[in-house]
Each structure stands twice: as C-alpha cells, then as structure tokens.
Amino acid sequence: MTERLLIKALSGGKNTKIITLNGKKMTKMPSALGKLPGLKTLVLQNNLIPKVCPELHTLTQLTTLNLRNNLLEEVPEEMKYLTSLKTLHLSGNRICRFAPGACDGLQNLILLNLNNNHLIQLPQEVSRLKSLTYMSINYNQLVSIPRELCFLKNLVELQLNYNQLICIPEEIKFLKKLQKFLLARNNIGVLPEELCDLKKLRILDIAGNIIQIFPSGFQDLKLREFYCEGNPLFLKQPVISTQRENVWSLQEITSRFVMNQLAENNPFLMDGIERYPQVRSMISQGKTCAICGQHFITVWLECVRFVSPPKDWKISKNLQLVPLRVLICSYKCFTQRDPNLFGIAQV
Image (cartoon, rainbow, N blue to C red; front, top):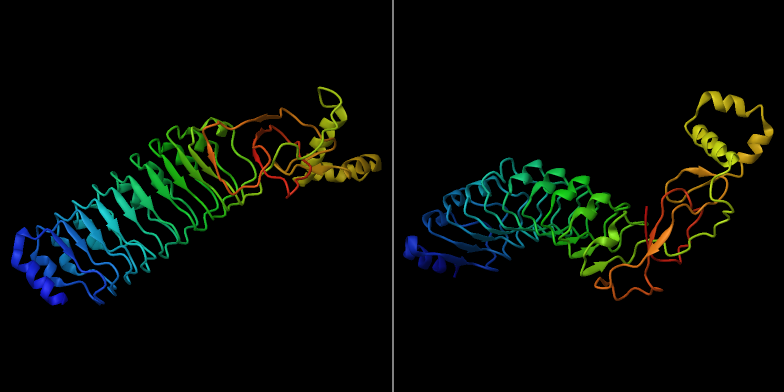
C-alpha cells in the first residue's frame, strides 16, 4: 500500500504537493522523496522511523513536516536545509538532543512542537529560530530555560508544562509579544520581577510549582486566565504583628546586625559574643524570616498591604479559597507560614 502511494506521488513529479503516510508501520523514510522537490506538506506520523533520510535536504519548498510518534532520537541536521519550513511536529519521539546545525536554516519556522520527548536542555542555537511564534516542549526533562530562547522576539506562545524547571531567567522580559506562558508542574520557586514586564501576557499557568510569593507589580499584569493551584502561597495575615512604634529600637537594629554577622561566621563577633552572656541570651530568642531568610528579634510588619487582583482575571475554578488578595511585603516580617492558608504574596 505504501509503495503504491509513493508510485502515485512520484508520477506527479514536481506537481506533487502533499504526501500523507500515517500509521503504515514504516521503519525508514522513503528515499524516493528526493524526487519530489515541489513537495509542500509531508506527514509521516505514527510510524516506526528512527531517523530521516539524507534526501530530505532536497525538499527546500517543504512548509509542513509532521513526524509525530516515531522513534527519532534527535532533531536531525537535515532540518537546516528546509529553509521554507513553517510547521514542524516532532512530538512523541525519543528526542534527547539537537544535532549540530539543525536550527541553522529554519529562519521561517513558525511552529515547533517537541512535546513528549526526553530533552534535558535546549541548545543556544535555538536563538536562530527568528520567526518562531509557537513553541511547545511539554512533558520533557528540561532543567532550565536558556537565555537565548528569550531573544525570540516573535514568540507569542511558550508551553513548558511538566518539566523540571527550577527558575525563569531574567531575560524573559525580552519576550515582548508573549501572550501565553504555561509552566505547570515544574519545580519553580521564584517568579522574577522581569515577568511583570510582559505587558501582552494574557494567559499564565504556574500550577503545581513551589512558589510562595509573587514579584512586585504582578497585580498589574492584564491577565485573562491565571492558574496557580498547588503552590504554597501566602494569604492575608500569616503572622500577627507585635509592633508598638513606627521605628525599630536600637536594640532591634543591633541584634539584627549581630545575628546576620554571626550567620556569616564573622570571627571578631563570634569571639566577642562569648564574653557577653546577656547578649547571647537575647539573640538566642532571634527568629528567621520565612521569606528573606534574614534574622530579627521582634516581629514587625514593615510596609505591608493587600491588593486585590484585577476583576477580569480568570482564576483557577477548582481552588477552594477565601477571597483572593495580593500581599505586598517589603522586609523580614514573617516568622511562620500556615500550610492551610492560601493566597498570593509579593516582595
């Protein structure tokens, strides 16, 4: 059946524009494709192809290539010859790397789908995908977002769900056109302030990470959809203040300085503190801020206010919350957090 379809396609010669051979149990890409230089669309999904054929480099007019659900282990070097390619589907393979130069000729690529593969990192050469608008790398093993990715100025949608990301680079601010950013089920602990520079961002999904607080200015994002369930976020009053005056006492200032210096193993203070038991007694009552990790004696709520998120935000419907508030806090004011509380905080 496959051979018959190829013969029919070959009979069309330069006039053949589309070839679809889905689910044919093919174990290799037909070398006869090299005789179809006018081909525009090639769909070979749901086969058993482990690598592309060398003749692929002749398909310089190809605009769509679909190799979903095959056995590829890399984004092949032959891709660099497909200078007209706009859509590339490689999901459901075993891809763990990009071959050197694979991105070189993909200047016109608009959509790249690499879902369900084994990528641990992306090469710096990804910055050569100048026209890329939609990028999806869900269900991989990425541990970081290369800063080079953040220079794809035409990127509108970036999906990185179900990876192993621990942070977002500050260079994310350069994705000025980004509208949809999906980061669900990673290991991200902090959102950079630069995220708030994405003025066109409308959909943000950070569900299932380890984020506790949000950056200053987060409430100014013009989001239409926002998903944040499964994060240990703060809500409203994480601790009761014992502040009585508007300024710190000299004792508080000195105690903080001494404790922070001791934490840095200052040999002078470590030696001197042994001679003053009353000082040792006082700083032994010190606490550590749950947010910034700095030391203090007295609990102060310093520059704290609650801000309601914009009314047009669509918040995750499955959240069992009291009314949502954004907490803005400036400096070492929390001594504990209740895991039963939920909310949004920013420092």
